[in-house]
Length: 316
Image (cartoon, rainbow, N blue to C red; front, side, top):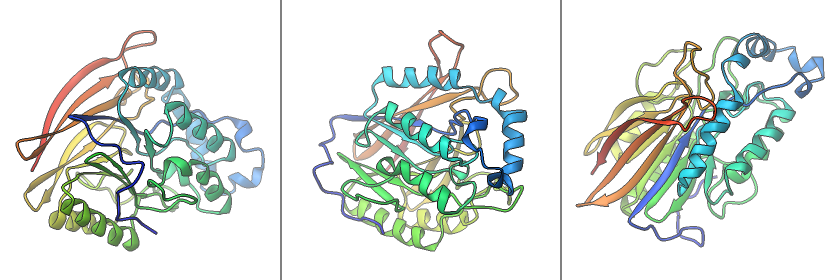
């Protein structure tokens, strides 16, 4: 199921600019009580649990993500986009907390989310039921009811396209895949969005550009790239790598920017990029979409995050 018509009561007229935030890889804390049935761990989740309780819980701190969320909300963006990995082990208790966390950001009118590989570590009825709790934030305007990807939200002249790359993978793998159905739907959405003169923003968890590792990358990145080469997009956002990055894919009129954001929750001095969020502003100027970026990085508890970098992106 997908939607290619974007008009409706949930499409406010865009003012001179549209500001939105990009957050990803929150990895909210997991607790022993989240999975009390030993059977839950007779699978790859056992090794993910060892990783979380042995090391990663000291890297991803809620104090860091709380500080950055406070900074984000203080800036009052028009929309917040979350590109997956809200949790760690896909346990029932985790989904409930992650849903409350999404609610703390705002309503589905102002917040959009997509799943990452940790949000669907195993693909079974229990994890699907848990993931369904995210539904209000992972569906398009007036879509209603159930999870279905892609979803689209139109905000003025900005079109937010949500894709899911979350699949169950073998032990030691964390790759993602869109699949043919999503790619066909994406083609139609991009085609219609171009006809309507919209700023098309694609969101997915796994990076579709840059170095692709077989066990960690987007399995159908080449097929995705062919769609972008034919129809283009104004911006592509992803998470997964826990690093802020800039890549590009060829588009019909020039390169299409592919922007990754670091994990929201990584504490300083842990051997990984410190937690941050990205702030974008979209404007129409001289027949082009002007997209600017500010990077907000964690500076310490009770210290306002630093704006450490700025960039200007343009797409015809």
